[in-house]
Amino acid sequence: MKPQTWILMLCISVSWATTAAAKTDASINRQATEARWQAYASTALQTQPALDFPYAHCFSRAATAHDLPETLLMAVARGESYF
Image (tube, rainbow, N blue to C red; front, top):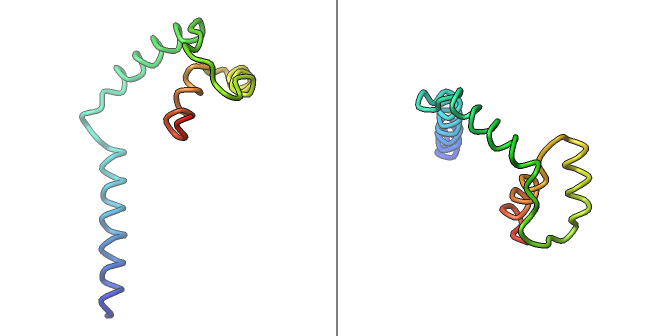
């Protein structure tokens, strides 16, 4: 086989193993994670954004449409695009 083929096979194997390990991580306590999410979700709906954000009306509509906290959507968007 060509060296490029071996490198490609190695990359695919490492990628697959990493993904499989992440999905089956025994150290993640799913019940605790769910409890933390429920605690956040129950208070986040009353929390107003601390700053003015561009396109705030879009976040508000999306939060209402998908039954998610507006602050969660804004936090994700800010983390992804740093606006």
